[in-house]
Image (cartoon, rainbow over all chains, first blue to last red):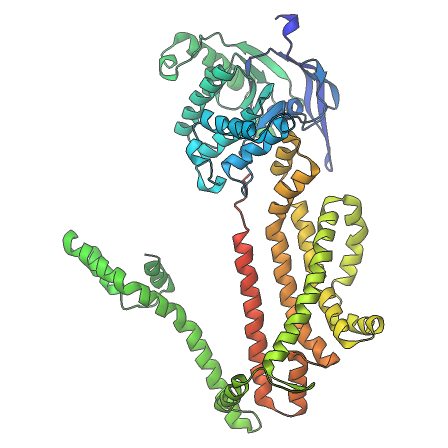
Length: 269
Length: 301
């Protein structure tokens, strides 16, 4: 990999949680670099610390040891330049879709741009996810898929350097999920965003990723294997279903998850 | 259709229920007709089933009252009380002297005391609740004091009020202040502590200013808790004012009850009890409506 292209650089990161029940070693020896414009998914069984890793990149958590860099600067805390799409959308229920997005836009561009420009940015973000019509609706008036799209719009409207997504489609039904994955592919192609996404869905990982980061089971989880997905873009779900290469990638991930890292159900229980 | 559900759930035979059963088994065309007919009748039936139980309860109460009154002799019958009430409410705002005023003035005087004491408690208690909820040190500082003082009857504070303010009216307001402030502090603080972590994460990722966090996240998300505190406070305040006024005298519904006891005017005491109940109910319902308007769907985690 090109040494000058380390957009996100994770060096020897360890994560230990100190709780009342004692300390828990969540992550060990994490080393990963992400290039600009790359789409990375983190996959692994539940409890493998993939969300923890994402929160570390977001700056919501601080590593117990090691160093995380983004654009050559240490990640010291959360920042709009690394915006997060949360699993449960986390829209503020008392604000309309427009106001939810505007909140972030105002924070990032409020100092340099006038009211009209901020409004245009917010409208553009809504249009990007196809929700112009839902602008004045509150989150409880729209469907789960629409809420998640507003969450994505809110994250994208801040023009982040990195888009971090924590199982963004996990709570959605299969059809809505497929639809949003397709939309996300289009949006990312248009905006050339760098994306790190946590998922537990093998098909989602293969369909979306440039590289799939497969994590071993916790405690003290680490990166087991990294699979480079060299499928041409734009990717089309139906065509890929018959694609031999796609099946190979899919098999490789399944192999890792269910042979090499058998499900840790016993340990979890 | 909700009326249909209501009648069915009440599990009492309403006149419309058989119509529906017939409609369900009949051929499609007439069924539509009959359902339509049922729909037309049902809102009234539903309404009737809604008011019937409370009216029955009321009738039962009056009946028991009538029996007790007939057996004891020194207790007024419902009819006598009603006649007294009509006389009383025909002129609620007369004023012949400081200790002889209409029931309207007495209720208003009590409401005014509650409003002042309650308002002051809100002005002090809600910001204090925010601080206690947000600043860990303050919650450790005030927690034990609040736990110690909360179970104390507000009337125990009345002598302190009399001592400090040297007058009955501010002392009564002081009691209201004391009893209203605890639920407001505690509920606001709990609300602040229970702001979903998701919202706070959003605030952190968006890097919102402390002012934006307060106005866009904390305040709206604490509002339902705060309104619960306000509702609890107004309930207690209305309980306490009656007792406080019995002790302080002057004008007020509590004093009025005590005055009528000294006059041995039992019908007036019964009327006062009903009036106190109705006013308390109205206050409560107003705040419930307010709370409903400001309660939002939470993010499910």
